[in-house]
Amino acid sequence: MLIRMLYASTAVGPITTTVTGTILRSAQAFNADNGITGVLCQGQGVYLQVLEGKPDAVSALYARITADKRHKNLQQLSSEDVTGRRYGAWAMAHVDLTDADSLLALRNSDALFETYPSTGERVMAHIDVLIAAGKVMGAPVV
Ligand SMILES: Cc1cc2nc3c(=O)[nH]c(=O)nc-3n(C[C@H](O)[C@H](O)[C@H](O)COP(=O)(O)O)c2cc1C
Image (cartoon, rainbow, N blue to C red):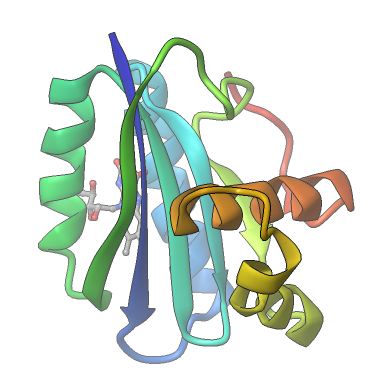
């Protein structure tokens, strides 16, 4: 069984390319070894992250991420049992939200994705739009 969960958080301090690069490097190494895939969206003081994997692995990682002082106010937007991975190509994809339109569109995704039932699904649908539009950075590592 697999779960997919999505949370949003507020960055503590400015999100620089150094901070993001450090997070992504450790995330990609650890996640690849532990069957975790997902996407980290970052920019304008906000993180949005999807974690997919075995339930125990995802909750253990989420507990560590929650304790990380580089962000605060973590809000779980969705968590669901799934039969397949949505971001299986990436140990942790990186989507840049520094472009104002990207984040604005995510904030407005309620209106854009009326047909999706949950906030989590709307946000993930929009993340997929950003990935399709080439906002995903870095090569797949899995
Ligand atoms: C927004 C954010 C996302 C993160 N995502 C991951 C991740 O997907 N995988 C991972 O191993 N660490 C991730 N980290 C880093 C962990 O919080 C933690 O620093 C790292 O796993 C090392 O943990 P340790 O200091 O307990 O060894 C993330 C940190 C932040 C701030």
